[in-house]
Length: 97
Image 1 (tube, helix red, strand yellow):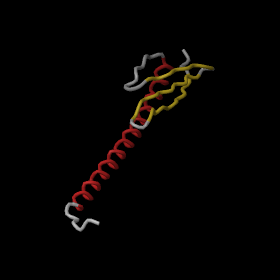
Image 2 (cartoon, rainbow, N blue to C red; image 1 turned 60 degrees about the vertical axis):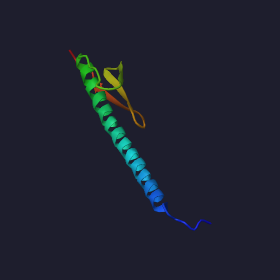
Image 3 (tube, rainbow, N blue to C red; image 1 turned 90 degrees about the horizontal axis):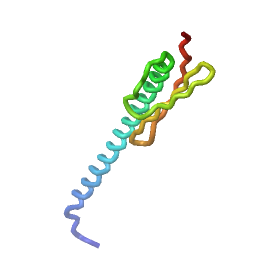
Image 4 (cartoon, rainbow, N blue to C red; image 1 turned 180 degrees about the vertical axis):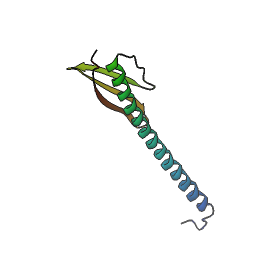
């Protein structure tokens, strides 16, 4: 067994700091993913309303898929995020002329 523990505190501090940086990175990624989910909710709702009244809509991020049936517009917005793709679906009634 080694009788000299010199430098072991530095190694432990470096490992603790590395763990702290990794955890902070994961938390920031999770916050960004939740923010992207909120953007998907807004984009789906805005795209459904725009399509229902006959206005073109370009999402700020990602893509939207639009389907229409029985007087209802169904829009699914998909936006890539750190932890997968966030998607949300919105349904809006068609505007009657």
